Structure formats: C-alpha cells, structure tokens
Image (cartoon, rainbow, N blue to C red):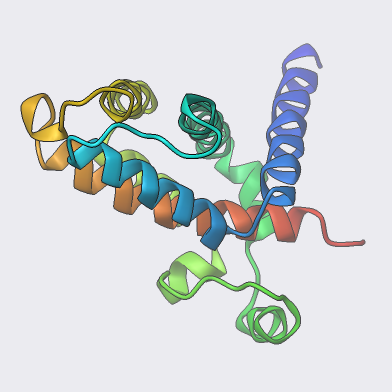
Length: 180
C-alpha cells in the first residue's frame, strides 16, 4: 500500500508539473526558448536578453524538471500509458479539436507517447541529460562555445530529443487531463 501511494503521488506530482509547464506555453513556445538557448551554446555570444541570465537559468530549471518528469513517466510507463494510449479515431478527433497537435512524431508515438519517452532515454540517461544541460547553462552564460567542451552529439541529440519529448509529454498531459 505504501509503495502504491508513493507511485501515485509521484505520478500526480509529475502530471501537476506538466500542467504548470504547459500553462506557460505550447510545446512550440518551449522549443523557441530551447532554440535560443542552443544558439547561445554553439556561439561565443553570451546569453543576454531583457531578462538577463534569469531567463536562461529558468529554461535550465524547466528542462531539468521536464527530464525528471519524463523519467517518472518512463519508470511508470504502464500506468502513464494506460491513460495516454488511444485508438486512431481518438487521435483524429484530438487533431481537429486541439489548438496544438504534434506533427513530428511517428504514428506509433502519437498513439502511445510512452514510446517517444522511452526513446528519449535511449541516447542518454536522465543524469547524463542533466549533466549536458548543466554544461549548456554554463556555456550560454559565458563567452565560450560548445565546440570547446561539448561534442556535436552533446548538442544535437539533446536538442532534437528534447524537442520531441515536449510533444510526447504534451500528449500525456492532454490525455491525462481529459474529463472522465
């Protein structure tokens, strides 16, 4: 009973975070922030916008949280999947009703977003992603570029994988918040 209660509260906390995360914007808005951050990682130009370092630090913190949420969903994919696997007829309805619907996911991933979440962790473990994004933060706040400390794999794969993860978690979020 205690283990079941912990799992339920862990998943509930993850879904609550997704509510907060997606209240800030659709996946496409989060991808814009990620792209801006990545551009400061690969260039020697220090991150500087009207909000200064707080903006990139906020992106970093959100990214770490999203990785942790994805890790929870991945570890409990049987429970997450039960609420997020849908038949194709429901997907067609979602596409027509939702103001945002993922475009760059396979049909298998759209039907079952836990597949995309599982694929996210094939390239790096949760801790490895956290380490890479910590280095991204350091580089974005300095006048150094990624070429000095990161491999192309540590820039391209985390960027592309996180972009897809936003979409997968969007589907989990939308499908877990459906009225019963």
